[in-house]
Image (cartoon, rainbow, N blue to C red; front, side, top):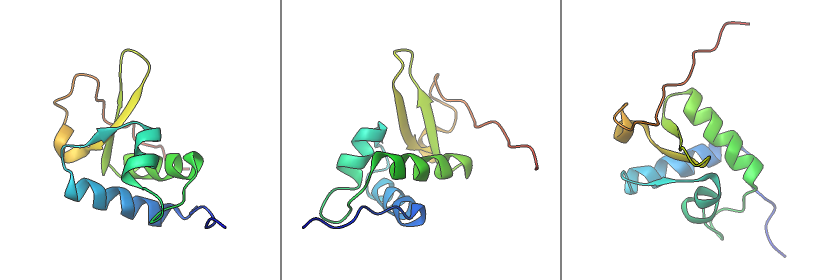
Length: 97
């Protein structure tokens, strides 16, 4: 019996940040992050849960979302990108509710 998928975004955020700490040059897609950065059996994840964690990290300016011309999206440490990648744009600030 396989373990239940981890849905707690804080656990997934921590796993993503730990991976980037060990691999600061890494950049990958949602699927790549789910499969390689958060591998089984240490993690059991759904793409939806990983997407939620990535969205939180982007909103906190901890990682950068890079939209490529071919439609793919990559994620990378914001420290690595720091505006130097031509496809990187800082997130739009949220308006207060």
